[in-house]
Amino acid sequence: MEKALWYLFAGTRGGANRVRIIRELEERPRNANELAERLGVDYNTVTHHLDMLEEHDVVDPGERDYGKLYFLTDRFERHWETFESITEEVS
Image (cartoon, rainbow, N blue to C red; front, side, top):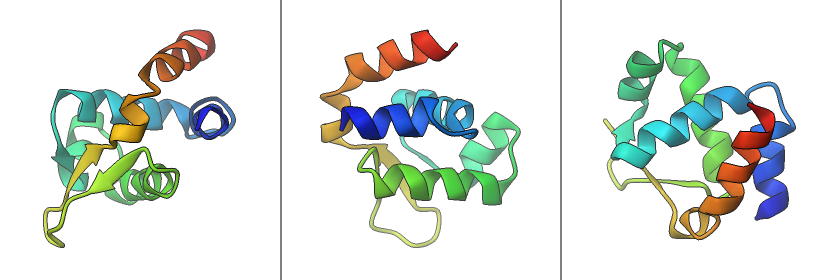
């Protein structure tokens, strides 16, 4: 998981937006539209980042198709300290 986190947040151009998405989901589950509005980012950009985060087991989509909420996974939350140290280093 640590390698995946480095890749997602420090190894690619979209890392900063993915960090912002995680910060929003830390507060509470949100859907892609809410995230796009809150972050001032295009909806398609947000869904791209959510797909990447889901692929690496960082977020888990809810059961609904329309207005699907995204949650942080338990696995990711167990690596929260790693996430924080990565974000401190790349900020």
